[in-house]
Amino acid sequence: MFTIVYLVPIGLASSMRMRLLAIGIFLAVLIVGSAIALTGTPSRRIPTSRAEKFVGLTAFGESIAAIVGLIVGFVTGNWWPFGVLLLGSVALHFISLAVAFFRRADYIAIACIFISLTMAIVNPLETLWDSWAIAGALAAASTAMYVIVIGRSLRHSNSSS
Image (cartoon, rainbow, N blue to C red; front, side, top):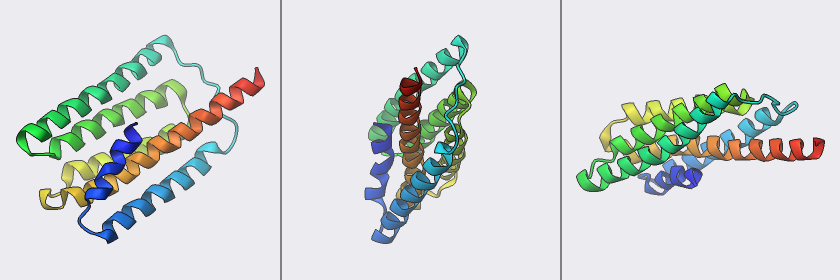
């Protein structure tokens, strides 16, 4: 679901050039990131109960951040906090996933999310939607790549049991 949310700003970018650039970034990160993340055998690391709880807590935090950001955006008309809150919570979630599962995909996703978060924090308000189109493309590619990697891990664990 969050992948779709991250793609929305592409439609709000100021020009077709920015939209195409964002789509290209999305596809490049998804394809290259998935190829890197899927090389070798999937991680067999079993997370501790504390790590699992932190993953769950940070996943819940993403939803809360999205709701708070949407409320602030609709009430004030200022959408800058939405991107910072959402991408900041996603960064924490991806860190928790990396600690819990130690997969290549976690580190690729962390790099993309931190670039997205930086763009959300430092962008000038007059180019907010253009910056968010690129940041959203990176975030969407990260989450889509992660779904692909989890799917492969599940198939791999089902076939080996």
